[in-house]
Image (tube, rainbow, N blue to C red; front, side, top):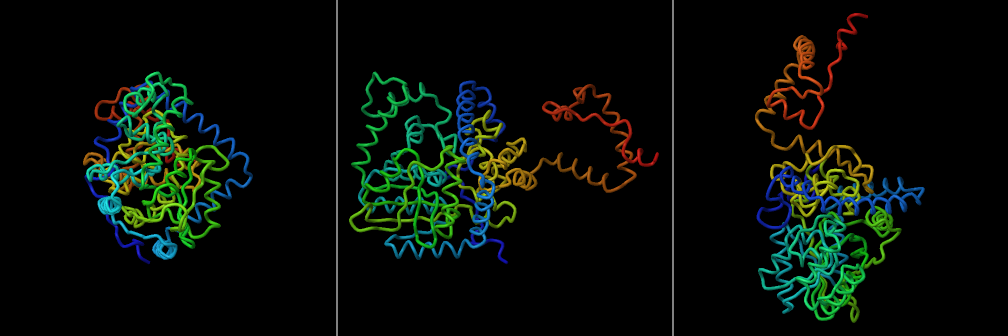
Length: 476
């Protein structure tokens, strides 16, 4: 059996896209922890989403069965990915679309830029898309003289504020309405100077700006939540209607999709359209579910291009443990329950994929050594696994990636010494007796000297028992 299903186990290239941070997670997280406004914004938002999601999930008696079905479908997809992608290509082509294969971010950006340039347009409208953020498409378009306008309200806020997304589902979750008002006043064309921070007023201002943009832009770029292999149908689910405008009004539509987003059949799609909205927005169904198959004469875009993106996904597939991260349907449920994310914020992860899923996906896409701190951005509490609608065992993946991450020489030497001792019963028994000396380190080990004191800054040293198990056994 082949270890790499697509035969391209290369990681995402350096210097392009948004998968690598400029500093390790611990350093970046300290800024988030020191920002009380950020923590209040995140705490309020995640608490609200958790409550809504829990309520609608509780309505379904078969929720766990749906989770099992979603996990099984995704596992099957990853086992048959080449076959399903070829089936998808045939179906899309038969429906009048054109399929492009992109090995990495550089190739995907080149393909999209050339397609837009060929239309003669110097502006595109965009549907919220994690894949295009991953590859840095906006920057590539700008370098070619093409402006990209984000039409998702939260993405627009991030773009106008020259900021970065901090959440998969709610990219501007770190901003409150007063901050959003200031961003609109400073960066949005044609805004009334008397604009207030009342949410309906902010939404109306964005609507006026975007409506004109929708009606005057001939090219749209989207992502895709799912693609049905048997029919060549693409699906985008969203809450605002901006996606529907982008997918129907322009003359040309270009969709950039990670290769793992394919599902085999319409019946499989039915499962995910129940899992996704409940896990993400806490809704029974998405307000807008848009689907299209190729080109329909006289209705909607008359040119459709599908760019299938690898960008390190084959490298993830090559890892029999790590590949389960590709089940992800980008619902953000793991972020909304993660105590580390809620306190540190999404920017601390340095990647377009923050939170628990980012801590296991980004290192695999880039190579673990380039995101070595992310697998440690977790308490291993398991809340993410319990919340995941497709049952990705994120704690298992975190431990797996920690083992693959480069370790300091001192740590490696300490682990080698521990292994040597544990492999020799006499030495192990002596070490157990010597461990009782830790009582002299004071309460909770606070009296340990450096470098051992670094361990007890955030942990309590376990109190050794009066008798070891071996001694107890020998006495009886």
